[in-house]
Figure 1 (cartoon, rainbow, N blue to C red):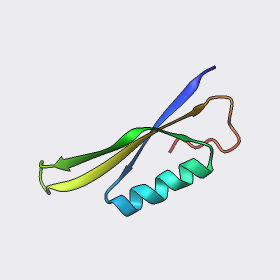
Figure 2: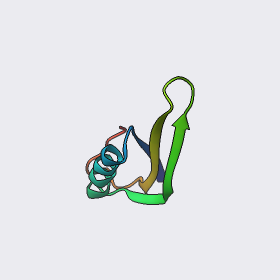
Figure 3: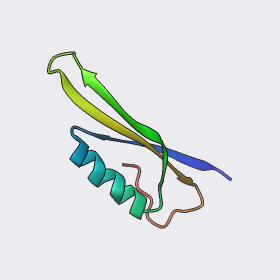
Figure 4: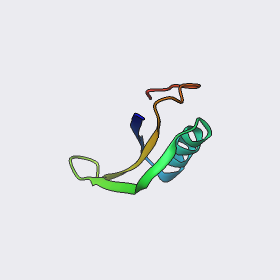
Length: 65
C-alpha cells in the first residue's frame, strides 16, 4: 500500500482550518499536529502548517494542492 503525503499551509488559523477541513472531506487523514512558524525574514508573520496522509488507492478526488 502506497501512502500519499501532503502539507497544507495557511497565513492564519482560520484559513488553515478551512483548507484542512476540505482535505478531510476529500479523504485525507491528519498526520501529527499543527506547526506554527514565525517568519522573521521581513514581516514577522505567522504561518501554520498541517501534514495529511491518504492511501494512494483513494483517487476519487485527487488534488495535489
